[in-house]
Length: 240
Image (cartoon, rainbow, N blue to C red; front, side, top):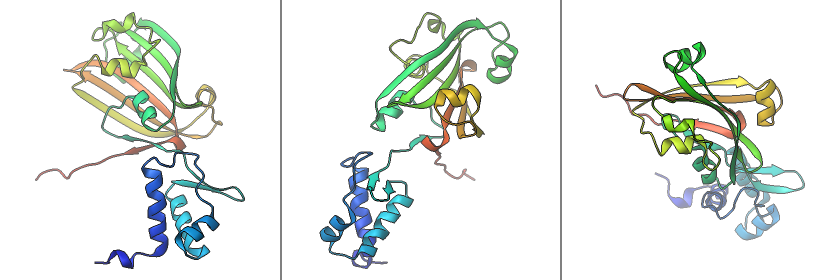
């Protein structure tokens, strides 16, 4: 086993700078001390400092700009794959301001498409919502959601002026089962425009169905600009 003394000097510097970032002392956009400042602070060679900064850039923690210096990178949102998350809480946890807008709200009967993707009987009354969430000034995700009004009747009168649909639902209806589907797709047309990205930009799509004791509660399709979102999963081996 290697001792701490055996750790390369550039790794020590990398860990010290990383601690400043991960603790929140240096927020996204914060200017990392210049190379000559780090040379003096750590009494090391320029090559050692450069290796430490390169390692941080490779890990996505900083952005190095020629002639401008290095800056703490914006955090990429992470979502645990098999959990249901509150988009508002997720954005606020990243340190960015949160806002949202309802792009469309329709009370209608379930269509054949709803039956296929959601499992509700035909002619069931549903509420269909299209919501755009923002992280700061940047579109974060487009939420295409359907509520089964048989299970969630209060949603028919809710205008969601003060609380986004996902937050509202999580506080009211306990779910017992959920199913996720995840894939990548290029943005085009209205979706690209709504997310403020170019046509063809890679997007991450998360589709989720939720039930309460066998009854469909909600279907949602979440479309994220791919570079802003990452899914993580933790699993245990099945018992023999």
